[in-house]
Length: 323
Length: 285
Image (cartoon, rainbow over the protein chains, first blue to last red):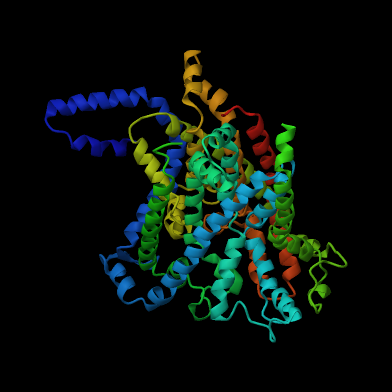
């Protein structure tokens, strides 16, 4: 905590006012001491395992560093190279991520809310089973399910999807789903949507249960005529914290997604960069080429993008106004 | 009450039928992995491919377990590590995060906004990108190859705190005010009022903390050089990566995947029931 106290100190004016502020500040700290005590275990771990590593990574973005040699400070060169010279980043990683994030993010979010809401309309006795059916794929985890996707989208006649389409007569020859550039990104999107009913989905379900039922009665008296209006004017405003949490989780998981292409193809770099997302680009530079400085610079850009996406989510569901 | 139920019924009947089909479709991967895990090798090469297993066999699991006993570290050691680490992590994450979230949600103090915005900011950072600095820190404070090295990094769980803050801020402040007037201490308010009322949210964070820690491979790969300190997830993952592109290994891989999935399922069933129960009976609203 002490390191954080100093910046507040230096800003004050005359010596006497410094002392005055300092004393008041300490009195307040002491008054709230139990707050800091409650926070301490979390804050210490948070600082050591998240804040410090992030600061270290951000610093690395301005350097050229290969992991074991010496650090060389090169200023903004990494960022300039990223936006002027890195053709793969500009023509593959960026558009792919944009398309992927646009469909999996808002699309997955809307689907999660729709299904959470529908589950909530079911009789309470059977809700559990449906919750389980939707949540199970994301619960199984990407590692466990990769074997399923590999078998389902296998490129020969034995693949389950190919076999089904051949039997229906919709295709004449088996399609190599996971190696053809025009299909890989689509398969990745479908698979990601399939496992998008995760923590955010559970939070929405929990949030739906906290909505005051009397509000619906009151709404009906005030002239709400259909369920759609109910959802927009009562349900969503009543569960803003959960909607916000879910939005944040969706943004994070969407922008972090990248291992999915590796699991599907078994290759760190997908054929013709068809499924190359920004996070794959980071992995490529960090763990294959060992250009840690450059990789850190890309992750700083990714952090900035997700920050602005987050601002947008806060605009929509900010808990400041009303609950 | 009965009239109200009857009025909803036609809508619910349609909903249940359509929804059942949809739910069945969504759970296809799970059904598939369940069947695949029990398929003998010759059934993998059948044409046309069959979805359901015909002659279920346990030999895939046998192969998993036997394969491990041949290795330097027995299979049971990985299981013990996983169970031990997950149990301790779960308990500490719940206590630590709820304490922090309670204070952040209900009190005003210096640096509160700073801490809150740091937490929301940190939700966005992919742990992969900070893997190397984290490794340097862990080995710097000599936590590598210890159980603390497994547990402490996951205690910094901004997601859990973030969610609990959202939930606890919905608990009416009057309840705590009333308890304070009745002479309850800060710790008393925390254990008697906040913890019981936050149970639904705690159940939810338990589910995904368990999921995260149970399936975590990164900690074992980066921080644990000693094979005896690594967890089941790491072992299963090391099996999977070798088997990924061949049809012949798919059933063993599926068995390994199933092995990872079952505890997730159990913990989810345990806690999800709790979520619903507390939601119905507790007097939050």
